[in-house]
Length: 185
Image (tube, rainbow, N blue to C red):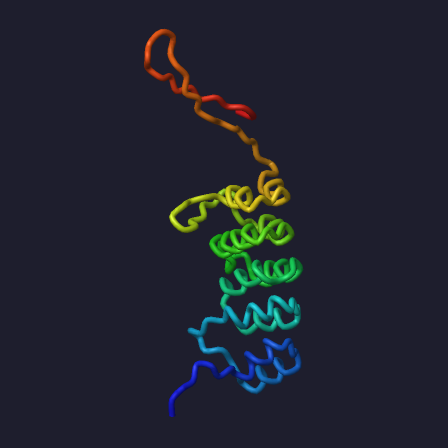
């Protein structure tokens, strides 16, 4: 008897349809997620529903924190992200998880979620690798043209705008590279 990857488990179906009582019944009867299963699709629908009791159950049964935070930052309402931040002890919620969730929130221009993650300790000065380029969340917010996100990420920071100007030296043909900066020093 072969296995069909398209078969959906009853637990996944109940989560997908936002059926709290069915989820409780199935978990009580011993249903579970296989340890190595990618839960992205299931968590996407759970986070889109933003049903706090179901999210609490997923935290209680030990669902992967990294997948939970990434999906929450991408699809959930801000109160769910705040709930997840408070659900895990600080020792279990590493910087990498918060920083990855902040990256997703900046990509989606979700200021409320980014604000919650920054208040929980996500680093604004992290380096994100997108394609072959490295950038910070600030660069990503500017790239996405999100003024509100730029304002949030730039709070309590000093900026300098610098550019190089090529000028001709006096009388000779060598170019003089001069760096001009404006703003805080």
